[in-house]
Length: 123
Image 1 (cartoon, rainbow, N blue to C red):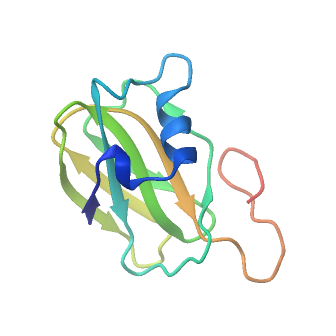
Image 2 (cartoon, rainbow, N blue to C red):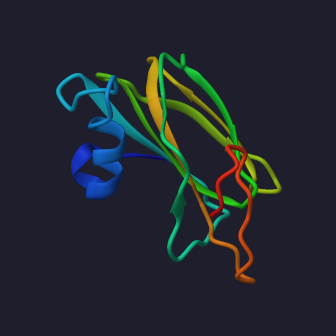
Image 3 (cartoon, one colour):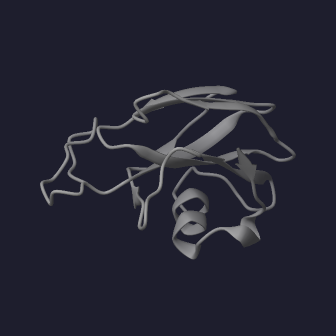
């Protein structure tokens, strides 16, 4: 489990979480990363950004193995727990403050065939 400041993440992640309409601002949010220690992805693929008042507990899933979950939470938030299920396709994350948005990053398929995500898009 890893917690990072905004400076430790890619520009794409920060832009996706912080610049969406109705999303969060860098001055009032903390960016958290729940890293799956069992995943070894060379180039993780981001899913659709989920934004809203999401509470302090998230349960996420993906058709591909989850590499990490990046979250924007209320300022000063910290991660309480992050558990990745044995199959690597599900994760549960708990934070000390409300999450305002998140992105699930998953491993790209090895056989070249597209994987359907829960939102209907391909990896």
